[in-house]
Image (cartoon, rainbow, N blue to C red; front, side, top):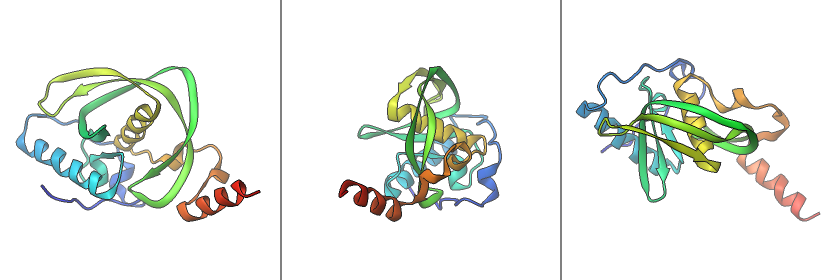
Length: 168
């Protein structure tokens, strides 16, 4: 397995719609998924989409407890009107965080690493991670989803501001 180079905001691969994975059982796709999992864990991320490692294909990985799960050719459907704003960071936008509105629940379907159909529902943080990673497959970065740029900043500055507020 290998640690892959992560594309940063400004690289064109992050702004394009990714292509469908034609053969999910291709050994190269399996190797890519393993490398993406290792890269995500090494970087301390919760999820990682293939375009973030310069591969314009529709797949992403995420932390699922102590395991790493993958979804190939995902389809994400927002469930219900309930939506919450939450802080997000991104391995492609290092050092920054922003408050992003997202659906509280999603339904998902796609293929797993063996090429088998999977589907289910996710809520809370997992729903947020899936929406964030799926956005990468459509060329969308989380700042494009933000509605209040006063809630966007460098991690250190946001932490300092929060510490000041808690001491007042």
